[in-house]
Figure 1 (cartoon, rainbow, N blue to C red):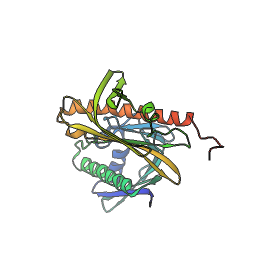
Figure 2: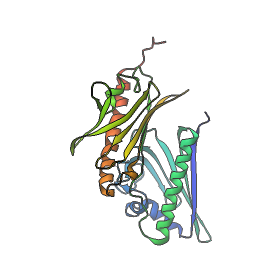
Figure 3: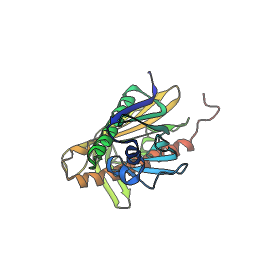
Figure 4: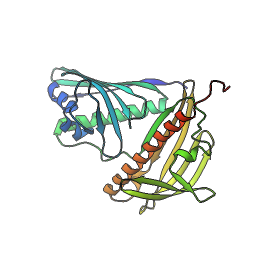
Length: 280
């Protein structure tokens, strides 16, 4: 499969260069169209960009060259491989061009297309904020997703019994029936339906989220190529639950934190059972 490691998007806005620079670096303004920075951007100082729905990026070693270039390395949920993001600004005849370039680990075309669409959406939100000054930030994403690259290991996350060592599920003795969340708000379980496993490749299920009658859909899949293996999680359906947005947002945060803890567990278990040098 052809793979890519670069994504680029740009916009033109009839806004002075300095105003655009402030919009992409000042925490108060960034929070109106993008996400919440934990502190002002400072050269070489780690930071975090939080979207309020459980998703976040950790930022490492920002570079600021006012007012033309901003660059940082970031990791989605703090576990995915880092990507280098470069913002370039230039102004001509009262028009400022904002160019974003993301360079990172190899991705299949489908994920490159999703990233491209995501950056276009963010830049459109930036442009809208710059035009009228009103918040344009989204409430929450419909899909929870994350991935980790696995080191060489005997641990097989999509084979039984390893599957049950990291995924927060419980069985009735025959098949998985419940998905568990245990956090500072206390334990809670959610019913599972349509559980299917293709050993070594994919596990899928539907997770009911009361009081909604609509299930959410979850996929865990293993992608392998010449460079190794990557475990990916997708859990969508949050915007179609038919429950108050605030309630859906709180639940999404809790599920995101649980999936992040599960991916951390996968990394720990993989590191604990490395492949022996004698393994063929």
